[in-house]
Amino acid sequence: MLKVGFIGLGTISHEHILGYLGCEDAQVVAVCSLEEAAARDWLEKWKLPHARYYRSHDEMLAKEALDIVEVLTPVYLHASHALACSRAGVKGISVQKPMAMTLGECDEVIAACKRTGTKLKVYENYLFYPVYVRAKQLIDQEIIGEPMSVRVNTLAGIRDGAEWPWCWKRDSWPMDLRKAGFAPLVGSDGYHKFSLARWFLDREIEKISAWIDPATSLDAPAMIRAKCRSRPGEDAKYIQLDFSFSTRLSIPCDFWLDDFVEIVGSKGVMWINQCAGAGNREFFSGNTMSNSPVFPPIAVFVDGKVTTFLAEMTAEERNWSSSFVASTRHFVEVMKDGGSPIYTGEMGKEINRYITAAHISAQEGRDVHLDEVTTEAEAAKRFEIKTNFCNL
Image (cartoon, rainbow, N blue to C red; front, top):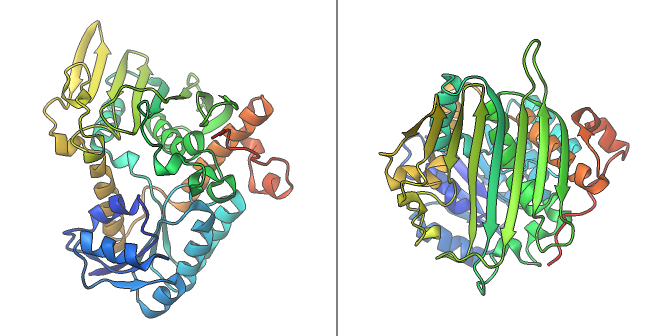
């Protein structure tokens, strides 16, 4: 039985724990949080009476022989906490995205884990979402021919008069560039979108051009275009990420963030409807979009005909939380049977380069080639993220 510890028990921890509940191969035995009362409530909620509480992660790492540690703290603490786990001999570290504030920190964590033989995973759940997994299978089967472009449209907002979600409030750490490192939508959430688009196309990015409105409450509207590196003899492939935001959305819940994907191929088009707000997720209770035949999980247009996929998928299967369960269980299998996580430290650093390039492009009003965004250039201060484009 693998012994698991959590450092940080914030909002996202309630998704991470799901993969360990009922797991025969791993068990949460210790948690670390600065707020003891909240930690006790967390342990009671998830029925973990035997898990031990620590206020200090150093004390937890010293007293517990942990096989896996989930690092779920604010971004500015990711590197120091991952390094502490590595020094303590933790066998597997799962770090929430983005993995670190800087490329230099990414390199430091990667090198430390290589020295100690620690398996390092940067947590990415989108690639485990069942709808996206099926879409990837269809793309690999060339149902729409050779994929040429991916567009991810992220809709964000709150209904008129609703309280702002904690993560978008002025005094929250995600809104503090010194603690988050990046903008909340284009950076933190955009990490997923770059990751997803790159996965669908199976290509690295060559250059990025971004526009982010600097005068709005959040870093939206924002439009990001990317050209992928081509392989010999193939046509170019492109990525577009769009972020919108409204404070007057007429929706049945107080918070909205969902994704709609369009993939254009040489023979057809694929549309993927919803992600975070799909299925029976309690957070979006009252949203009936998933029940509408207008928004099937996947729709494909080829040869003048439309075909839908996963129409029989249950609301539970379509729930975004299922991606967390699958991502966590995959890492448990890696730790138990060997192999590598889908998202290694090197891949986590690569996506950090993409979101960094998007910020620099928007700041400077120009295309940014990924060859510019290196650890060496960062150390020489040839680029710097100076704003999160938010005006709350």
